[in-house]
Image 1 (cartoon, rainbow, N blue to C red):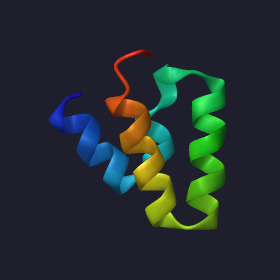
Image 2 (cartoon, rainbow, N blue to C red):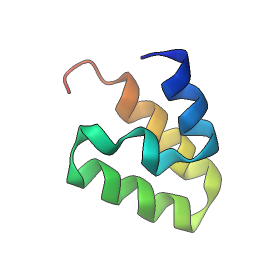
Image 3 (cartoon, rainbow, N blue to C red):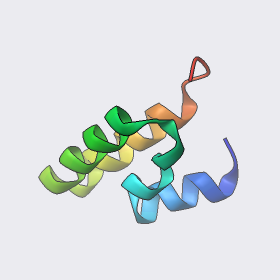
Length: 52
């Protein structure tokens, strides 16, 4: 996880997980629409997952 991805996840969460798959992007978009903080948390969790 690079520092640029973390900064992008804080500024605009869905854009930071574009290469992780459609499901991840959809989840982050929904959570970002519900509130900015849940979207950021979900993006950081998805970016920090070593299995993907």
